[in-house]
Length: 312
Image 1 (cartoon, one colour):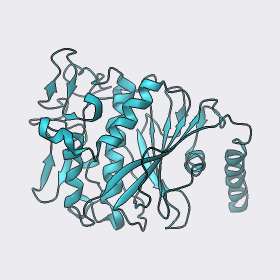
Image 2 (cartoon, one colour):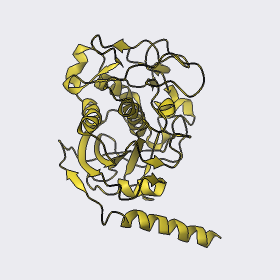
Image 3 (cartoon, helix red, strand yellow):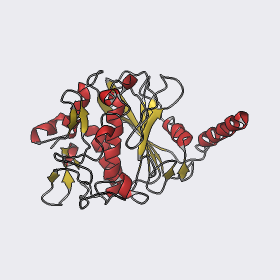
């Protein structure tokens, strides 16, 4: 039985890799690239770590695989969020993406920077529209670069189903290979069609439990703004959790996952907290980014203050 299972697993992995041979690949050039990195641990929507990776996290070169169809506006919103992490000029104008990221400096390994590396568009679904974890791992290996411990974000479109998506996770992070030096990946899916009430809160009414009226998404896209929340969560967890050193109070939860669904002061289950509102669009946000972009980012556990710290 064990032999059959291993043989079946091998076939899945081979089919995942082979599927790229006929795929239309559009590789975009990197923006600015500092090369080098570090990473850690795997996490589901609210919870748990499975392992750690050995990494040097001072400079994170983040490659992106776009699986399925994303519009240029959707891609721009996500890429500008990533580029905003180290864009400190907005800090003087109010709470910013960069000031949100600074909380990661309070963890054991100190400050880290993230730069956008290579991007790959796979708009013709070379592995189909129903993916499992081996497919995500195969996709994460399609872009090289970034040196030892490189990080790849695999982002799946709204019509792609992924094992566990919408039932117990909105994204995950893990190792690209069995080697600790093989790099890591994060995956986030677009929940717009499949589960906005689970993975796009607070921009959609939750499936159950107490709730306030949904907030207006700052980029006008419930699915993509939901993706940004979970991408932010996973990047923060990855950057702070080398050897599980960032686990909250020595437990199993990571810094951003521990503070799930908290976006402003006074937050409680069903209420996102007091956040900023754009006077023109009515959209809710708590962080400024590049090019005037606005984002709603989750609270992060502050190890020095001993609490979930929000930007507003």
